[in-house]
Length: 324
Ligand code: ATP
Picture 1 (cartoon, helix red, strand yellow):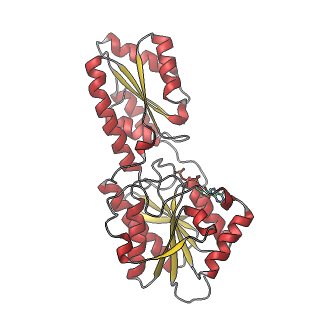
Picture 2 (tube, helix red, strand yellow; picture 1 turned 45 degrees about the horizontal axis):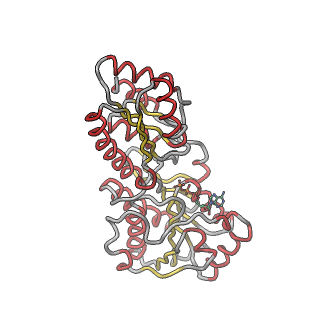
Picture 3 (tube, protein in one colour; picture 1 turned 180 degrees about the horizontal axis):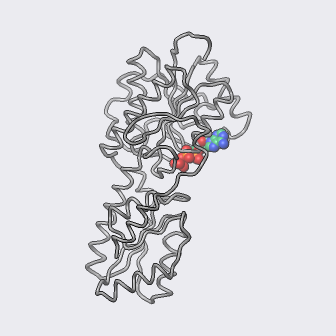
Protein backbone atom coordinates (compact mmCIF):
# COMPACT_ATOMS: atom_id res chain seq x y z
CA UNK A 1 0.00 0.00 0.00
CA UNK A 2 1.35 3.44 -0.77
CA UNK A 3 1.58 6.47 1.47
CA UNK A 4 -1.05 7.28 4.04
CA UNK A 5 -3.93 7.10 1.56
CA UNK A 6 -6.97 5.15 2.60
CA UNK A 7 -7.19 1.54 1.44
CA UNK A 8 -9.88 1.17 -1.24
CA UNK A 9 -9.75 -2.15 -3.07
CA UNK A 10 -9.36 -5.49 -1.31
CA UNK A 11 -9.49 -8.98 -2.81
CA UNK A 12 -10.42 -12.23 -1.08
CA UNK A 13 -9.58 -15.83 -2.01
CA UNK A 14 -9.88 -19.32 -0.52
CA UNK A 15 -6.99 -21.75 -0.93
CA UNK A 16 -5.89 -25.28 -0.03
CA UNK A 17 -8.40 -27.83 1.25
CA UNK A 18 -11.96 -26.54 1.64
CA UNK A 19 -13.34 -26.24 5.16
CA UNK A 20 -16.91 -25.66 6.38
CA UNK A 21 -17.22 -22.03 7.40
CA UNK A 22 -15.11 -20.63 4.56
CA UNK A 23 -18.30 -19.13 3.10
CA UNK A 24 -19.14 -17.46 6.40
CA UNK A 25 -15.62 -15.97 6.40
CA UNK A 26 -16.01 -14.69 2.81
CA UNK A 27 -19.35 -13.14 3.80
CA UNK A 28 -17.74 -11.37 6.75
CA UNK A 29 -14.88 -10.03 4.62
CA UNK A 30 -17.28 -8.72 1.96
CA UNK A 31 -19.82 -7.15 4.30
CA UNK A 32 -17.33 -5.71 6.82
CA UNK A 33 -15.28 -4.33 3.94
CA UNK A 34 -18.28 -2.69 2.27
CA UNK A 35 -19.36 -1.32 5.67
CA UNK A 36 -16.03 0.53 5.77
CA UNK A 37 -16.52 1.85 2.23
CA UNK A 38 -14.13 -0.58 0.51
CA UNK A 39 -14.57 -2.27 -2.84
CA UNK A 40 -14.24 -6.02 -2.40
CA UNK A 41 -13.21 -8.37 -5.20
CA UNK A 42 -13.50 -12.15 -5.21
CA UNK A 43 -10.72 -14.25 -6.73
CA UNK A 44 -11.69 -17.71 -7.96
CA UNK A 45 -9.67 -20.88 -7.24
CA UNK A 46 -7.08 -19.61 -4.80
CA UNK A 47 -3.70 -18.38 -6.00
CA UNK A 48 -4.31 -19.77 -9.49
CA UNK A 49 -7.08 -17.17 -9.82
CA UNK A 50 -4.46 -14.45 -9.40
CA UNK A 51 -2.38 -15.96 -12.18
CA UNK A 52 -5.41 -16.54 -14.44
CA UNK A 53 -6.86 -13.07 -13.72
CA UNK A 54 -10.09 -14.48 -12.38
CA UNK A 55 -11.51 -11.51 -10.45
CA UNK A 56 -15.00 -10.06 -9.97
CA UNK A 57 -16.48 -7.39 -7.76
CA UNK A 58 -18.53 -8.65 -4.81
CA UNK A 59 -21.53 -6.74 -3.48
CA UNK A 60 -23.60 -7.23 -0.33
CA UNK A 61 -25.90 -9.57 -2.28
CA UNK A 62 -22.99 -11.69 -3.61
CA UNK A 63 -22.72 -13.34 -0.21
CA UNK A 64 -26.43 -13.67 0.52
CA UNK A 65 -27.62 -17.12 1.61
CA UNK A 66 -24.17 -18.66 2.04
CA UNK A 67 -23.53 -18.46 5.80
CA UNK A 68 -24.91 -21.98 6.30
CA UNK A 69 -23.25 -23.63 3.31
CA UNK A 70 -20.16 -25.84 3.42
CA UNK A 71 -17.43 -25.56 0.77
CA UNK A 72 -16.52 -22.20 -0.74
CA UNK A 73 -18.37 -20.14 -3.35
CA UNK A 74 -14.97 -18.86 -4.53
CA UNK A 75 -13.79 -22.45 -5.15
CA UNK A 76 -10.38 -23.50 -3.97
CA UNK A 77 -7.33 -25.00 -5.61
CA UNK A 78 -3.73 -25.94 -5.06
CA UNK A 79 -1.62 -23.88 -7.44
CA UNK A 80 1.79 -25.36 -8.37
CA UNK A 81 2.40 -22.37 -10.69
CA UNK A 82 2.24 -20.00 -7.72
CA UNK A 83 5.22 -21.87 -6.27
CA UNK A 84 7.35 -20.52 -9.14
CA UNK A 85 8.87 -17.02 -9.28
CA UNK A 86 7.20 -16.41 -12.67
CA UNK A 87 3.81 -17.43 -11.30
CA UNK A 88 4.10 -15.10 -8.32
CA UNK A 89 5.19 -12.21 -10.52
CA UNK A 90 2.18 -12.75 -12.79
CA UNK A 91 -0.02 -12.63 -9.69
CA UNK A 92 1.68 -9.48 -8.42
CA UNK A 93 1.43 -7.68 -11.78
CA UNK A 94 -2.24 -8.55 -12.04
CA UNK A 95 -2.97 -7.18 -8.55
CA UNK A 96 -1.06 -3.98 -9.27
CA UNK A 97 -2.87 -3.49 -12.59
CA UNK A 98 -6.21 -3.97 -10.85
CA UNK A 99 -5.11 -1.58 -8.07
CA UNK A 100 -5.83 -4.19 -5.41
CA UNK A 101 -4.24 -2.93 -2.20
CA UNK A 102 -4.67 -5.95 0.02
CA UNK A 103 -5.59 -9.64 -0.24
CA UNK A 104 -7.41 -11.68 2.39
CA UNK A 105 -6.20 -15.29 2.12
CA UNK A 106 -8.51 -17.85 3.71
CA UNK A 107 -6.85 -21.27 4.05
CA UNK A 108 -4.37 -23.47 5.89
CA UNK A 109 -0.66 -23.22 6.62
CA UNK A 110 0.34 -23.73 2.98
CA UNK A 111 -1.93 -20.87 1.98
CA UNK A 112 -0.27 -18.65 4.59
CA UNK A 113 3.09 -19.45 2.99
CA UNK A 114 1.52 -18.30 -0.26
CA UNK A 115 0.28 -15.12 1.45
CA UNK A 116 3.78 -14.52 2.80
CA UNK A 117 5.17 -14.95 -0.72
CA UNK A 118 2.75 -12.23 -1.89
CA UNK A 119 4.01 -9.99 0.92
CA UNK A 120 7.53 -10.52 -0.42
CA UNK A 121 6.23 -9.26 -3.78
CA UNK A 122 5.06 -6.08 -2.03
CA UNK A 123 1.36 -6.98 -1.75
CA UNK A 124 -0.36 -6.49 1.63
CA UNK A 125 -2.17 -9.59 2.92
CA UNK A 126 -4.13 -10.85 5.91
CA UNK A 127 -4.54 -14.58 6.63
CA UNK A 128 -7.68 -16.26 7.95
CA UNK A 129 -7.05 -19.81 9.23
CA UNK A 130 -9.51 -22.26 7.73
CA UNK A 131 -8.72 -25.98 7.72
CA UNK A 132 -10.42 -28.98 9.29
CA UNK A 133 -6.97 -30.09 10.53
CA UNK A 134 -6.69 -27.36 13.22
CA UNK A 135 -2.93 -27.64 12.69
CA UNK A 136 -2.07 -23.93 12.80
CA UNK A 137 -0.16 -22.94 15.94
CA UNK A 138 -1.11 -19.96 18.16
CA UNK A 139 -4.81 -20.27 17.44
CA UNK A 140 -7.02 -22.49 19.54
CA UNK A 141 -9.26 -23.22 16.59
CA UNK A 142 -9.27 -22.94 12.82
CA UNK A 143 -12.48 -22.48 10.83
CA UNK A 144 -13.97 -25.86 9.89
CA UNK A 145 -12.44 -27.90 12.68
CA UNK A 146 -15.49 -27.85 14.95
CA UNK A 147 -17.77 -28.96 12.10
CA UNK A 148 -15.39 -31.80 11.18
CA UNK A 149 -15.19 -32.92 14.83
CA UNK A 150 -18.99 -33.05 14.91
CA UNK A 151 -19.12 -34.94 11.60
CA UNK A 152 -16.66 -37.57 12.85
CA UNK A 153 -18.41 -37.79 16.23
CA UNK A 154 -21.68 -38.42 14.43
CA UNK A 155 -20.00 -41.19 12.40
CA UNK A 156 -18.63 -42.75 15.61
CA UNK A 157 -22.12 -42.71 17.14
CA UNK A 158 -23.51 -44.57 14.14
CA UNK A 159 -20.69 -47.08 13.99
CA UNK A 160 -21.01 -47.63 17.72
CA UNK A 161 -24.62 -48.79 17.25
CA UNK A 162 -23.63 -51.51 14.84
CA UNK A 163 -20.41 -52.30 16.74
CA UNK A 164 -22.42 -53.00 19.91
CA UNK A 165 -25.13 -54.94 18.08
CA UNK A 166 -22.68 -57.22 16.28
CA UNK A 167 -20.03 -57.17 19.01
CA UNK A 168 -17.41 -56.12 16.52
CA UNK A 169 -14.23 -54.10 16.43
CA UNK A 170 -14.29 -51.11 14.10
CA UNK A 171 -11.32 -49.04 13.00
CA UNK A 172 -12.29 -45.58 11.70
CA UNK A 173 -9.74 -43.61 9.70
CA UNK A 174 -10.06 -39.84 9.90
CA UNK A 175 -8.19 -37.02 8.11
CA UNK A 176 -4.93 -35.70 9.53
CA UNK A 177 -1.71 -36.38 7.61
CA UNK A 178 0.57 -34.86 10.21
CA UNK A 179 -1.85 -33.74 12.89
CA UNK A 180 -3.91 -35.80 15.32
CA UNK A 181 -6.14 -32.91 16.42
CA UNK A 182 -9.25 -34.16 14.61
CA UNK A 183 -8.74 -37.77 15.76
CA UNK A 184 -8.16 -36.66 19.35
CA UNK A 185 -11.13 -34.29 19.68
CA UNK A 186 -13.56 -36.59 17.85
CA UNK A 187 -12.21 -39.58 19.78
CA UNK A 188 -12.79 -37.78 23.07
CA UNK A 189 -16.29 -36.71 22.03
CA UNK A 190 -17.19 -40.13 20.65
CA UNK A 191 -15.63 -42.17 23.45
CA UNK A 192 -13.31 -44.15 21.17
CA UNK A 193 -11.47 -47.01 22.89
CA UNK A 194 -8.16 -46.05 21.27
CA UNK A 195 -7.01 -42.95 19.42
CA UNK A 196 -3.98 -43.27 17.16
CA UNK A 197 -2.30 -40.01 16.15
CA UNK A 198 0.73 -39.15 13.99
CA UNK A 199 2.39 -37.34 16.92
CA UNK A 200 2.73 -40.61 18.90
CA UNK A 201 4.25 -43.64 17.11
CA UNK A 202 1.66 -46.40 16.85
CA UNK A 203 2.01 -49.23 19.37
CA UNK A 204 -0.18 -52.02 17.98
CA UNK A 205 0.57 -54.22 20.96
CA UNK A 206 -0.77 -51.59 23.36
CA UNK A 207 -3.92 -51.13 21.23
CA UNK A 208 -4.43 -54.93 21.25
CA UNK A 209 -3.79 -55.18 24.99
CA UNK A 210 -6.46 -52.57 25.54
CA UNK A 211 -8.85 -54.52 23.34
CA UNK A 212 -8.07 -57.76 25.18
CA UNK A 213 -8.57 -56.06 28.56
CA UNK A 214 -12.00 -54.93 27.35
CA UNK A 215 -12.87 -58.40 26.08
CA UNK A 216 -11.85 -59.87 29.46
CA UNK A 217 -14.39 -57.68 31.21
CA UNK A 218 -17.08 -58.68 28.71
CA UNK A 219 -16.82 -55.84 26.22
CA UNK A 220 -16.96 -57.35 22.76
CA UNK A 221 -17.21 -54.18 20.71
CA UNK A 222 -14.70 -51.44 20.19
CA UNK A 223 -14.17 -48.29 18.13
CA UNK A 224 -10.59 -47.33 17.32
CA UNK A 225 -9.91 -43.98 15.71
CA UNK A 226 -6.81 -43.57 13.58
CA UNK A 227 -5.54 -40.45 11.82
CA UNK A 228 -4.52 -41.12 8.20
CA UNK A 229 -0.93 -40.03 8.96
CA UNK A 230 -0.60 -42.54 11.82
CA UNK A 231 -0.44 -45.60 9.59
CA UNK A 232 -3.97 -45.42 8.21
CA UNK A 233 -7.04 -47.53 8.93
CA UNK A 234 -6.25 -50.48 6.64
CA UNK A 235 -2.80 -51.02 8.15
CA UNK A 236 -4.05 -50.71 11.74
CA UNK A 237 -6.99 -53.03 11.00
CA UNK A 238 -4.73 -55.70 9.49
CA UNK A 239 -2.27 -55.48 12.39
CA UNK A 240 -5.04 -55.91 14.98
CA UNK A 241 -6.47 -58.86 13.05
CA UNK A 242 -3.04 -60.46 12.91
CA UNK A 243 -2.40 -60.08 16.63
CA UNK A 244 -5.76 -60.85 18.21
CA UNK A 245 -7.30 -62.97 15.41
CA UNK A 246 -10.72 -61.35 15.57
CA UNK A 247 -12.89 -59.84 12.87
CA UNK A 248 -12.07 -56.15 12.38
CA UNK A 249 -13.97 -53.77 10.07
CA UNK A 250 -12.28 -50.69 8.68
CA UNK A 251 -14.11 -47.49 7.67
CA UNK A 252 -12.35 -44.64 5.90
CA UNK A 253 -14.40 -41.49 6.33
CA UNK A 254 -12.51 -39.58 3.62
CA UNK A 255 -13.89 -36.42 2.09
CA UNK A 256 -17.24 -36.48 3.83
CA UNK A 257 -15.32 -34.94 6.76
CA UNK A 258 -14.79 -31.79 4.68
CA UNK A 259 -18.41 -31.18 3.74
CA UNK A 260 -21.60 -30.30 5.50
CA UNK A 261 -23.25 -27.27 6.97
CA UNK A 262 -20.89 -25.43 9.34
CA UNK A 263 -21.70 -25.52 13.04
CA UNK A 264 -22.77 -22.32 14.81
CA UNK A 265 -19.31 -22.26 16.41
CA UNK A 266 -17.57 -22.26 13.02
CA UNK A 267 -19.92 -19.62 11.59
CA UNK A 268 -19.30 -17.30 14.53
CA UNK A 269 -15.55 -17.92 14.43
CA UNK A 270 -15.50 -17.30 10.66
CA UNK A 271 -17.55 -14.11 11.01
CA UNK A 272 -15.23 -12.73 13.69
CA UNK A 273 -12.05 -13.76 11.89
CA UNK A 274 -13.15 -12.48 8.46
CA UNK A 275 -14.05 -9.11 10.00
CA UNK A 276 -10.70 -8.96 11.80
CA UNK A 277 -8.83 -9.50 8.52
CA UNK A 278 -10.47 -6.33 7.14
CA UNK A 279 -9.52 -4.42 10.31
CA UNK A 280 -5.90 -5.52 9.92
CA UNK A 281 -5.74 -4.30 6.32
CA UNK A 282 -7.46 -1.00 7.20
CA UNK A 283 -4.94 -0.51 10.01
CA UNK A 284 -2.14 -1.36 7.55
CA UNK A 285 -1.03 -4.25 9.75
CA UNK A 286 -0.29 -6.60 6.89
CA UNK A 287 1.59 -9.91 6.88
CA UNK A 288 -0.43 -11.20 9.78
CA UNK A 289 -2.78 -14.11 10.40
CA UNK A 290 -5.93 -13.82 12.48
CA UNK A 291 -5.97 -16.14 15.51
CA UNK A 292 -8.36 -16.98 18.33
CA UNK A 293 -6.82 -17.42 21.76
CA UNK A 294 -8.79 -17.97 24.92
CA UNK A 295 -11.90 -16.81 23.12
CA UNK A 296 -10.36 -13.54 21.91
CA UNK A 297 -9.64 -12.64 18.30
CA UNK A 298 -6.10 -11.41 17.78
CA UNK A 299 -3.39 -11.62 15.13
CA UNK A 300 0.20 -12.86 14.80
CA UNK A 301 2.89 -12.34 12.14
CA UNK A 302 3.20 -15.22 9.64
CA UNK A 303 6.76 -15.91 10.88
CA UNK A 304 5.36 -16.79 14.28
CA UNK A 305 3.45 -19.67 12.75
CA UNK A 306 6.44 -21.66 11.54
CA UNK A 307 6.52 -24.09 14.46
CA UNK A 308 4.24 -27.12 14.55
CA UNK A 309 1.09 -27.03 16.63
CA UNK A 310 1.45 -29.28 19.67
CA UNK A 311 -1.13 -31.91 20.48
CA UNK A 312 -2.67 -31.54 23.92
CA UNK A 313 -1.07 -34.48 25.71
CA UNK A 314 -3.32 -33.88 28.73
CA UNK A 315 -6.36 -34.50 26.54
CA UNK A 316 -4.67 -37.48 24.90
CA UNK A 317 -4.05 -39.11 28.29
CA UNK A 318 -7.52 -38.18 29.48
CA UNK A 319 -9.00 -40.00 26.47
CA UNK A 320 -6.96 -43.08 27.45
CA UNK A 321 -8.16 -42.94 31.05
CA UNK A 322 -11.81 -42.46 30.09
CA UNK A 323 -11.77 -45.33 27.58
CA UNK A 324 -10.82 -47.97 30.15
P1 ATP B 1 -4.90 -27.59 4.10
O1 ATP B 1 -4.33 -27.41 5.49
O2 ATP B 1 -6.36 -27.78 4.11
O3 ATP B 1 -4.15 -28.62 3.29
P2 ATP B 1 -3.30 -25.50 2.95
O4 ATP B 1 -3.57 -24.06 2.82
O5 ATP B 1 -2.20 -25.91 3.90
O6 ATP B 1 -4.67 -26.20 3.32
P3 ATP B 1 -1.66 -26.25 0.65
O7 ATP B 1 -2.00 -27.12 -0.50
O8 ATP B 1 -0.49 -26.62 1.50
O9 ATP B 1 -3.01 -26.12 1.49
O10 ATP B 1 -1.38 -24.76 0.09
C1 ATP B 1 -2.32 -24.12 -0.76
C2 ATP B 1 -1.61 -23.32 -1.84
O11 ATP B 1 -0.80 -22.30 -1.24
C3 ATP B 1 -0.63 -24.09 -2.72
O12 ATP B 1 -1.26 -24.79 -3.75
C4 ATP B 1 0.24 -22.96 -3.26
O13 ATP B 1 -0.42 -22.33 -4.34
C5 ATP B 1 0.33 -22.02 -2.09
N1 ATP B 1 1.59 -22.25 -1.35
C6 ATP B 1 1.87 -23.25 -0.47
N2 ATP B 1 3.13 -23.18 -0.02
C7 ATP B 1 3.69 -22.12 -0.64
C8 ATP B 1 5.00 -21.51 -0.64
N3 ATP B 1 5.99 -21.99 0.13
N4 ATP B 1 5.20 -20.42 -1.41
C9 ATP B 1 4.21 -19.93 -2.19
N5 ATP B 1 2.97 -20.46 -2.25
C10 ATP B 1 2.70 -21.52 -1.50
